[in-house]
Image (cartoon, rainbow, N blue to C red):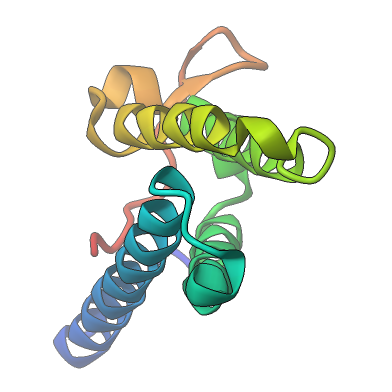
Length: 136
């Protein structure tokens, strides 16, 4: 049943849902990132931070629920690395801009890198294609 073809209606619901979630995520990243890079007081960008972390977590759960192999593909591994870097905001608060820039650069690699790189399995040492995904 998991490999059954989606109906057109379900496809569009999933596609628009994921696209909307990603758009809200980018809004949160932009707001929090601008505040961090420009040295704005945290209370002015904290809501954006919460938006980015919540939507990012939901997008990550979406991918894991779709196919657990996401966790061993480079795109999943790099996402977990990004989360690790974000946790360093607490002990290394004076390096927030540098950490954020690193996270953003990793995001570009994850989002826009070639499929052979994104789908590379760190366990298998080769490209592992997951089930067909709904883009968004």
